[in-house]
Amino acid sequence: MSRSIAPLLCIFLLLATSSASAFNITRILGQYPDYSTFNDLLSKSGLATDINKRGTITLLAVPNGAIGDLASKSDDILKRVLSTHVVLDYYDPMKLQRMKEKTAKMTNMFQQSGTAAYDQGFLNVTAKDGTFVFGSAVVGSVRDSKLEKSVMNQPYNVSVLGISKPIVTPGLDGTMAPISAPPPKVPAPKKSPVAESPAEEEEAESPSQEEEAESPSEEAESPSEDDDDADSPAPSPNADSAPADAAPPPSSAGKLKASFGLFVVLASVVAAY
Ligand SMILES: *[C@@H]1O[C@H](CO)[C@@H](O)[C@H](O)[C@H]1NC(C)=O
Ligand SMILES: *[C@@H]1O[C@H](CO)[C@@H](O)[C@H](O)[C@H]1NC(C)=O
Ligand SMILES: *[C@@H]1O[C@H](CO)[C@@H](O)[C@H](O)[C@H]1NC(C)=O
Image (cartoon, rainbow, N blue to C red):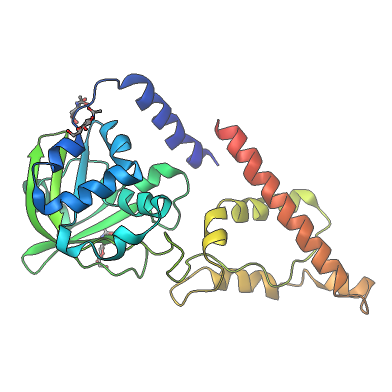
């Protein structure tokens, strides 16, 4: 839980201390007609305002001809997707060249949303074929957004790098295969609430995936952990006490688990503020 509180505190501190903007991203991109659609989308989604509140960013901008279906997304999803194109550090081509091992993991602005999970808030950049290729750091995601050029930079506050196509982060818009664990198959009632709470906390930490994505993914690694839970002898006490009425108890226990999970989420949100 403390992991989700720290970024929020950072945001509050930044908002409280930064009144003067380091730059105006709308005005900067306005000088480059090739990126006018991307610029419009930054404003339409409201992300431009958030970007301008920061002191140091690298924007991975997509040229008009490669915008694809970005323009047809709802403002809410658009903002999430675009926020993965904003790196919370300064990178110009020279700094990319100096990377150790010719690869790096970069934090993007979606990480600050508090809803990022499974590395959705990180990018992977890797030297390849004489250029650099960007993509989501989520395991199994396609990474083929090539660095085309340095559009502009103002060291060390803002750098705009032109990339060949939008970065696709699995699970952001609900159209990709989910990356979350499926819901437990057998909600087993447990006697001790103390023993139960750690497991409930794990489930409560990723409510966004459960909303957005409900079927299991080929790429997902976590279902196997859940299978372990399901195979564990936990259901047997229930079967011992009422073998004939096995069905009703799990369903009411499932409701209990769900409402307890919701309570944990609400409690953590309240705690974060
Ligand atoms: C940023 O620049 C745009 C375009 O020039 C302008 O419309 C907008 O008001 C500016 N925003 C701020 C906060 O100055
Ligand atoms: C510009 O970047 C430098 C170095 O990252 C930072 O210290 C400074 O606060 C930034 N300027 C503004 C106005 O945020
Ligand atoms: C980025 O992805 C490549 C290819 O999957 C991998 O080899 C590399 O270790 C990753 N870089 C980092 C910093 O995780």
